Image 1 (cartoon, each protein chain N blue to C red):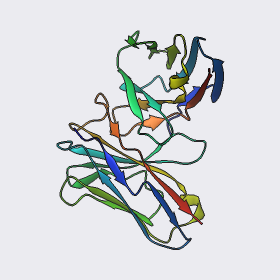
Image 2: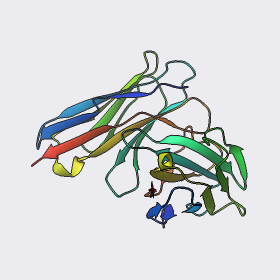
Image 3: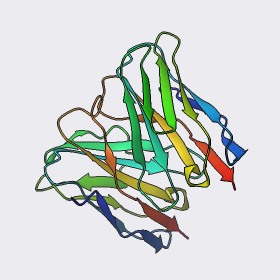
Image 4: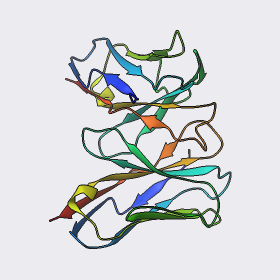
Length: 111
Length: 116
């Protein structure tokens, strides 16, 4: 059983705050790490697919880093907006075909 | 450019009944996945299809669960003799190519199953 953990489980921030959360995963047999954003009643939306140690990817105000040697990835949101409120999921792939998901971080941004 | 669609969006059934959940993947995507998200947890893998065949069904919890993809496109997840513990959001995803490792999996909005 692969252990993928996310912290914190939930997070409340004020509009304009910057925030970050963590995904930890097994450091052996690493293939790819995916980040998804999931709003209630919508489809999970892919944010990043990260494959190389030291990778840093950015999409607008959201960025992510990857450390495969120690088995963690950080997701950062700069200047949070209410529309960023969602559950952020990371998913680990170890060369199998399925994704192993963490439990998610539920972000709520107050106006 | 339709995305992955799933029907129904919500299904309420009684314990012991049979249910079918449908997934329409993105046209041309050969790989199709089913996941299940129980309350408070992340999605868990159930089964993976490559074309018409189930390439990996190791995530199916027991023999009450079965899935088919007869023409390599639409897939149906079938649950017999439903139990209250089967209540969850069932997610379907499709992917271009044989491996979901590097390739993005595109998800549908899910079917919320409630077993009373």
